Length: 242
Length: 218
Ligand SMILES: Nc1ncnc2c1ncn2[C@@H]1O[C@H](COP(=O)(O)OP(=O)(O)OP(=O)(O)O)[C@@H](O)[C@H]1O
Ligand SMILES: [Mg+2]
Image 1 (tube, rainbow over the protein chains, first blue to last red):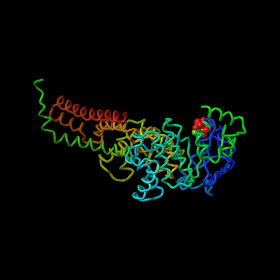
Image 2 (image 1 turned 120 degrees about the horizontal axis):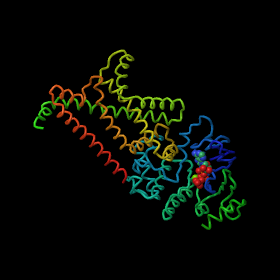
Image 3 (image 1 turned 30 degrees about the horizontal axis):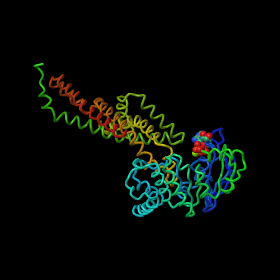
Image 4 (image 1 turned 90 degrees about the horizontal axis):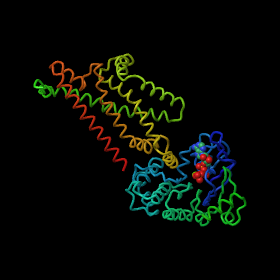
């Protein structure tokens, strides 16, 4: 489904990604972890073309994201993305947040879009809040709505960039619960997170990154039980004893 | 003091009201036109397309380094030359104001656009929205809202500047007051009255800005 082949990316002179290669099959859940600044966010932003790359190719569902003149808007509408800081549109109500792209990109009618939006709000437990504005909601509620907003586009895969790291501890679970459910329903997911409990529970594989390179890419149990590299061991001991 | 006669104000009210209408109407249309053109200039400067950004920057810097009164003159003489027929003082003044104010509004809108977090654009892009859709539905509404107090402040300055249109013989409120003052020989009364009117309008504007700022801060 997602095929990342030998990609490299530079910001000016600075090499953010170095020869990264990995695959995510349909229905697979892959967790990406690693120290701050290791390039995790950059890697997943490349998957839907939010960041251009200078070397290598990325294919999503057979289409090359990195091809010159690729129809990025069409491609992006099929891949959901959830951000660390939610990025709900503050000047729109919850319902409008969910309807905007459905109407403008998928050309659904207002009634159709609202129907889909309400079904998804119910699913993330936010039905009573459809007329509220983002600033009236807690971080956990905002993130669940952001997930619903992505799902409203009926994506074939979902990307998450540290979806719980801006949340107060007591709100992390409500967001992870939604993600676990999504994973169990068979959604293809690439999740940057340091929630190792989540990784153990639903991830098929864990990718560990350091200074822009993929250092480990192995089945979850394998990764936790006997990490190969010193850097991964070091990282795990820090994060698990934390 | 006994010599003052404020009846002159009362008797010339219809004439002054006509002048005030012209000032307000010119201000209103120039604000709308200035914001629209200014927003386009701001988008051009932030477009990342080098020639377009350079063109917009040159325009803005050029217009900001000449006095408004000169721009009013230019358009009064230039526009008829360019389009081959006279368009009248009002429209030439309106065009001058829009072109001039756009330079200032573009700087305000540029700051406003930059105040919207990059993640908002990413969120829009990740749902497949295109550049114009993102600007139209996500970025500009937020930029505009963040900048409303400054936009209104600029509008107050604009209102005061409309008094310059006397140079193309338009009768705005200030000019009308001057005419009455001189023909009736009541200079002190009329200029005092004009000052009070400007003060009331501009002060209300400032109060509006203050309450908007307070409301946005909460
Ligand atoms: N726009 C940019 N211009 C220059 N350098 C950048 C830019 N964005 C990111 N970087 C650099 O690229 C590197 C990787 O950034 P990235 O955000 O992908 O890391 P990350 O693994 O997601 O880190 P974190 O855990 O802090 O989110 C960092 O060193 C960062 O400073
Ligand atoms: Mg990151």
